Length: 140
Image: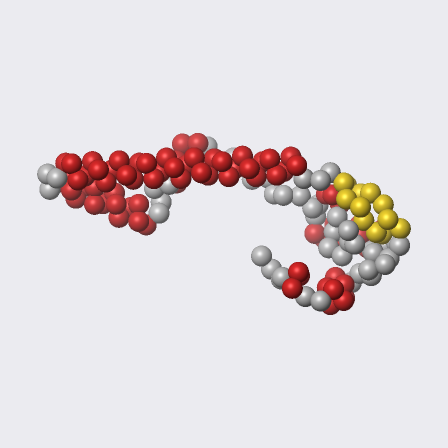
């Protein structure tokens, strides 16, 4: 995650970011920082196919151990034990898949709710700017 800016004194943060609490950044510096850091947006990752997301649930070490236990139980003729373990593993995979799908939907909702504009001080004057144009050092 990087540095914990919230835990540092305000003057130290201002100094580190090369900005001024009253004047903010000038437009030229804000433009340079935007070119260096890019827009202030959440990264848009391509969606994972549902079947692949489901299969990813079986990549966990403990799930693999349980699948091995299932195979061993079935090989030894303990069908009830093997099927019980398999049902538990499948339930676990289904729950994990559903939870990941909900998390993806929540992230998409956050993306849609993101503030389109922010009040920023630049060159000593407050103004409204697209949130995507905010840069490190802006006084919001």
